[in-house]
Length: 413
Image (cartoon, rainbow, N blue to C red; front, side):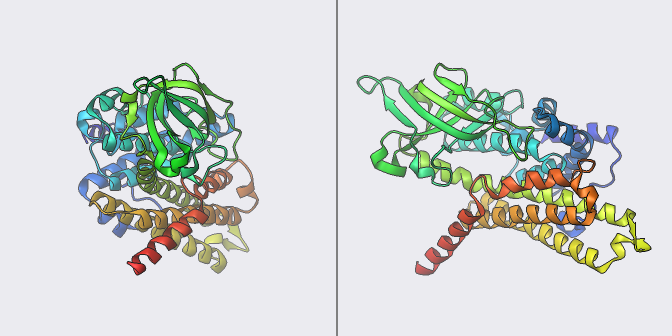
């Protein structure tokens, strides 16, 4: 929290961006927040306006990793929002995480990916790691100087996390290291990361009960990073395959217990979906602000676009969806902070917010017309970035299955 207070003062000296509420943002929505989270929201919004948004299109166009911005996130405590201060984190909660993610994504969604993956990794390690593991693999990753990857997906099991084909076998008589072999796909942060979490099976016949989580540095023999994927959006971040060829991992670097990795992954995904929902809400908010500003200035048919009822309908529908997404996200975060299982609520927030991001980016382009199709304004960037929020950490189709199963199970019980 001390980091965030210092950031408020620093940004206050460098920017003059109003009260932080922003166009299209309901005052009542923010008034419900604690004083700490209101400070956090303003800090992150000012930071996004001053240091993220001005560089987002260039970073996207040139596929430049935002190293300086990530370093600043670390200084502010945003790379480890929920991590205890004794480990170098901000010591805040999941509602704070959701607020920070939304504002960072509003400025540059690609930067929010780096923040989100690092918090996902750190949260799993804080909850399930031993004290020596936390000192070795958590503390160095809380300040932004080192970032982590989270290697769950594979070429053949994007949505079916329990079908891992990457294997982990004990060497020798069972007292040696694990040897990991296989390929991980779509791994964010993998090019720039210093280490991370790899999921592999110790026995394929056990299916999801064989999945085990392993902590590792990246610069170990046998661990390779394939070429960076060329993506539609989020182009300032790296997404690569990881290849594992007899990667030796000591038994002391198993996170949790052997065979307990699937539970860790599912718990982490519930929490991670809060982050994706907040990220998507930030993209949608940015699109709403851009098109309302444009509609107020653009004159057509002898009047401002904002006075045309069709445009007003679009703006109203966008604002409604953004506010609903934000509240669903905050509800999931509040439930998480209060010890509740959030599988259904996190899936609802992620589903609604991701589809809202795509919808709002689309409508933003429609309101801007030809200008929305050019790279002179960031509308097209918002659309390209929004699309992946409906895919990673569980597609929209998977979210609907999760929600339906939770409801049907609750009825049957």
